[in-house]
Length: 291
Image (cartoon, rainbow, N blue to C red; front, side, top):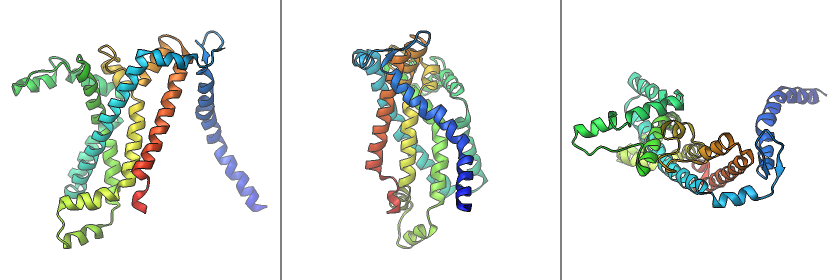
């Protein structure tokens, strides 16, 4: 009887959280699936149109552009921010285990807690034709670049700003992972004559495989959710060079008021992220360092 009472009390404790998850996560997913098969503009009742929204996506140039840009953005930001975070964490863990190292970590974490709109605005100012970046290029007699006005440079600019914002978060995760690696491994390899670089590639990197899996997974999800930075810096332009999936969803829902079409795009993005996560799990191997 006591065990049953404890179980009932346990379920009662988690009930408020379970209700919130159902109301704000699980139920909206099923509602999104339903509305993706309808024509719905919020004011009028939803009308069932079957697969019309999905067939429309195949002909929509914005969908093709947003898929391409989102994938390219992901391929730029995820590897770059993961590698930078790992290298910085390794340097801080190896050379700066002191107050200076703590100050550097704290400083690099500031962009993480800053608003994406603030970061986007700040980088937009830096990347103006007469901004800081072009001033530096001019000082070294390097031709200036229209960072936010070029079809190629605009996406690269948003990617750079995103990496700058995210790298501090992944740095802290990598740093904690490095601190968890047994010191005996490094001491034994040092006795065998291993250099710092050899220790990094043969001890640090393999020992952090599960951490890398987490960081790559989070980075991929965040890259597919990118909206604030793009909306603030380029609003999808010039042309369709920086339009992303979430920006396309926003435009369909709140500019064209086609909630059904927006729901179908969101569902496609959800499926893509799930598939990518499954591929990452297969090839990166979660918890490989536990084998």
